[in-house]
Image 1 (cartoon, rainbow, N blue to C red):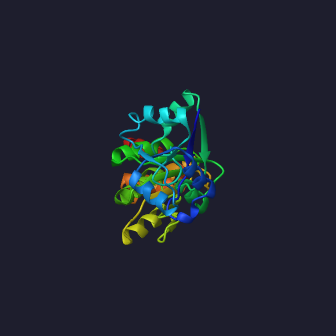
Image 2 (cartoon, rainbow, N blue to C red; image 1 turned 90 degrees about the vertical axis):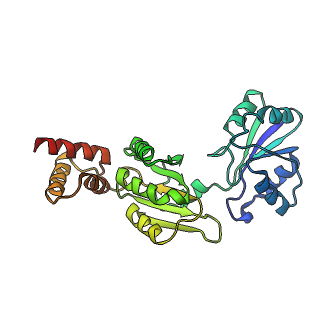
Image 3 (cartoon, rainbow, N blue to C red; image 1 turned 60 degrees about the vertical axis):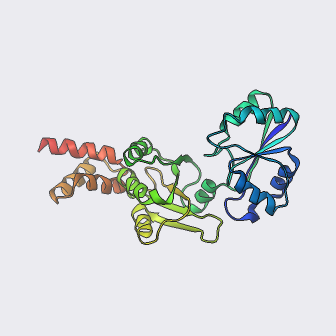
Length: 276
């Protein structure tokens, strides 16, 4: 019975490839790779000649039998394009199938973009929630953010460059102007981590074109602030309405100041307006 090795590969800097990872990739009989072209470049760099087979989102079920049969004969390694396989990459189904068939599953840890970004964010690391890629459409994204708006944990998201500004806008609208860090191109030549309130991060990337994959690390609901008493919130809402502040902008602003979620504040706004 063979072992399925989950081998972490560099997320940018090839010097992050561990000696153990290289040894395992040389020893196994087969490497299942998310993108064989990308992995072939990595193997060529480290002079590794192990046979490759593709294993990606659209063939991950069809490939199960082939990989399980190879595990009956020897060890197999699973790699993704970068970082730890099976974390926001294909692999979950293969791990489950290998375990069900009685095989050992062994992680070979290494680079991970979400963990690297969290560690360097300056935000609390004792309790965090990794949520993968944000939904593509704004309405779905805002609805999703509402489900985690009240949680006290540091939140970690992935985002692509062409949706970054829209997602930052939705983050501020739903979660408020929380402290965050936006990390891109980690371990690469143009590594950049922008820290500060969501508004500051958004302003930065409005003037600097977003490039590369992003990890967004956002503080939990309360952060370092205590939640306002309801009476204080109502007074702030009334002052904002008297000043002519649009309800949506008022809710977004107060969400960043009060510790209440945008939805809770918006409900209070509607209730106050109905009584006028």
